[in-house]
Image (tube, rainbow, N blue to C red; front, side, top):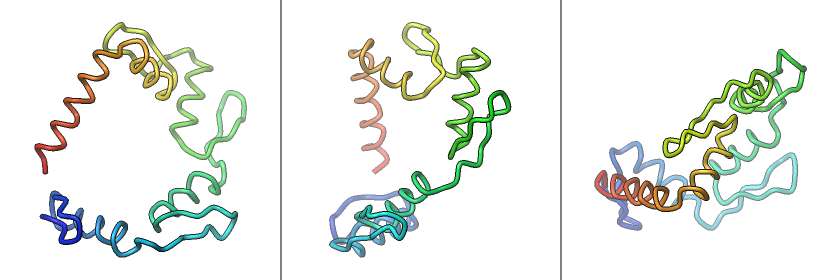
Length: 129
């Protein structure tokens, strides 16, 4: 389905409606956090901000008691205790405990493969629309 405002294509009415609601209906508005001075461009971004910044750290490490806001952060932290890597570079086999380090490694150490991967993702995305 195509957006009547910007002519962008979407898979299904749900995705189109979500796009219109957050991008076009809320355009020009400012969404202020009620906890801190942060401002977001739309209600979805504000909700994500609150979830990321203002959610209580409820996931606790069984090894050291450190607490985390997100389960993924706890999972990656526990990997540092157990020395069991969570991610493996598909190009050289290097192992990582964090998605961020895995991402940065692939981008910096395998730039040609990274660019090819990015191009393929972009082509797949374009073919869906």
